[in-house]
Length: 83
Image (tube, rainbow, N blue to C red; front, side, top):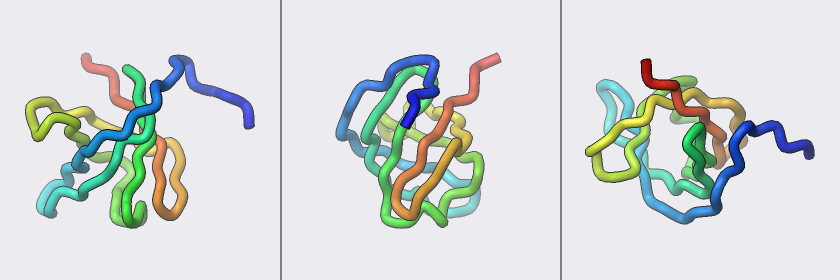
């Protein structure tokens, strides 16, 4: 598979939570990370909408995410650029 990312990702194994309005947070594991996006692993990717917030540090900072691709248990997300 061709690598299409602009910035290389670092392999990590870190807990995170997807924050969804009006719903309980969804626990996930960050498998790779860069300043522009991340690869997430979770029980069921169908639970995630196309856009959501992600916290890597118990809610201190939120990253607005957009799903680039998804499989049953994994998603690749890009981080929205701050204005």
